[in-house]
Image (cartoon, rainbow, N blue to C red; front, side, top):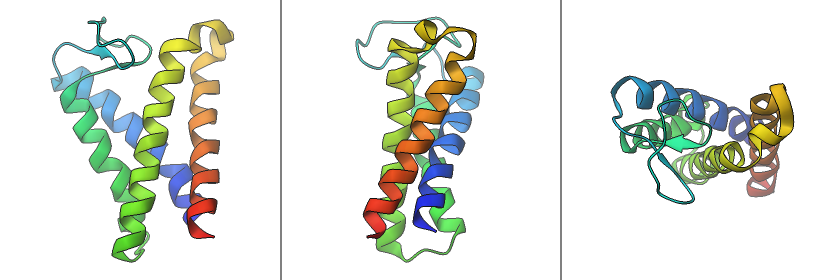
Length: 121
């Protein structure tokens, strides 16, 4: 259950962060370098989108009725995997071809599942 929760958390976190950031977030920046980026650019983040993504990462374990400590660990792991998705998006996505976004999402999901399995063990 923990692996499923953390595998789902990065996907929700990434989607919410992207939508909120593009809609209301202002000028995005590339996570690794801090330089300004175009709205919708691979790996770009806004402060509001990041905060929204952080909250969304915790919604999955909360909705799964995990105990409070598990919500903290699983939510933090899910958000970390969302950040991994952003780093992969900024560095690898274009190199992976037309399905690059799918591959970076898969990477974040698999990392989440592994992180959830390890934290539950």
